[in-house]
Amino acid sequence: MQKHNQKEHLYKLLVIGDLGVGKTSIIKRYVHQNFSPHYRATIGVDFALKVLNWDAETVVRLQLWDIAGQERFGNMTRVYYREAMGAFIVFDITRPATFEAVTKWKEDLDSKLVLPNGKPVPTVLLANKCDQGIDVLMNNGIKMDQFCKENGFVGWFETSAKAHVWHVDFRLSPSGMRDVHLYPFHAFVGLVPSAFPNPVKWKI
Image (cartoon, rainbow, N blue to C red):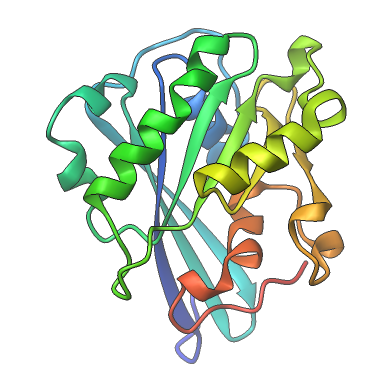
């Protein structure tokens, strides 16, 4: 329960990427702590809210917008993207075509949404389904770092909603990310504090 003297921070975060890469599963695992193996495509956009009683003075509300994979080809993304403070682009490491589509999603995002200072919205890349035996972090870490640098991502994570795995590449942050929670959503503000007005001090 929120106390009267607590400050509240609301952050809208987009979760985008091709159809079937696991966006909804990642969000459900994070927000509701469950996973369903039964696939059901998102129609349009879905929402989830994660409320974090961060400390005695702070409540953080993460508003997660789960945008359907086919929406990149429509005009509604401009509406969905509006006022977002950051984004996650998800790909499935077992389906190379979904990685190839990542740059298209980034281009779509950057063409339709910028921060008030005119800069692109900070975006994190999620390499999902790392439980499938393809170790992106160990085998392609340097390439992934370079890809993120060349394409304007602030960082990347390996994830698995099924196996409840969240791997952080600590090289992304020289400022002491080693104590951060291994959820990308928690880590986001730690990676890109300049994106947030009145940023919360993220500590675990």
